[in-house]
Image (cartoon, rainbow, N blue to C red; front, side, top):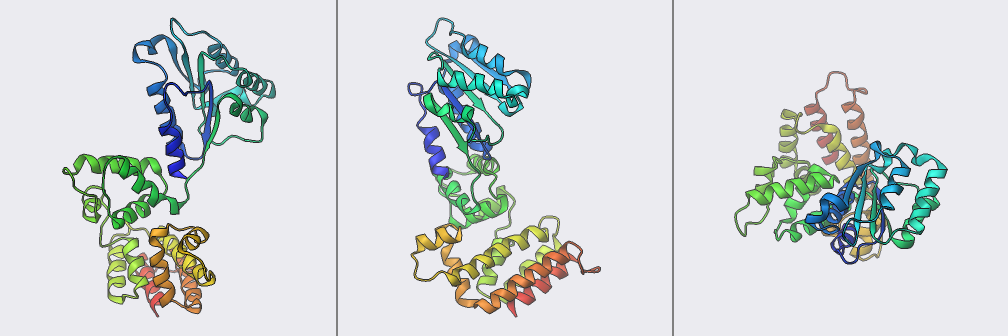
Length: 339
């Protein structure tokens, strides 16, 4: 999915821009990237002062947008009318005003590039939303699934000519999650600090992002997958001593998701790795970890593991825990999983 979005943005050029665009969805990172690209290529720098209009939804009405869009450019071939935070346009909920937008989108001025950038997804069943596809584009940038994040990281690093190790990818994806802007910012920070031809590895992540390469939930997951008792308890002791940086609830969720997928793997027979990854909703590169866990954890034990994680989650939220510390909840959980 991320590659498809990036390809759409990469293909934009000054000659192929369409007269109308509706940008929306739950993934603001790509909406912002698209807007930035349009700002770079639509109007030459020396024309921006009188042929580029950047408006904000909270400050304008639907009628204002139409008036700007129907103006002719000043001594140039075209103008850009960009409306940011279009979801803040107060009167756009009115059907008559939606019809105004729809009528313009169906018959746009060829010398205007109108871009409506929304901060949330719009109802694609509505005719005014659909109308943007006739002479332009209606682009719904949807939030990525967690299993797509490693590919995004790898792809983004490749676009910057950076090499990154699989463990570094895992650390970033698990620590940051599917916040693409935060990932983008961290990789840019890493690039600034890297020496020429230096790759991003776990040590680099630890140094510049602040994620321990030895004491993190990914290493705990790996230790549990290998049934490494000593390392598992070393890690949770560190977590218990540093609960501010390693709160138990997010880690329980990550472990629950992992072991739930291992349980699912037991039920998926005679499938290719590509099909397994798709049906499990995981990145194919890390499929080997799930297979290894499945070989060591039979279905009956997995059911007990998931039950133990559920109990730990309840205790972490104060249900039946008394005065037990997070460190002790961690220890009890690991003991239950490994025995």
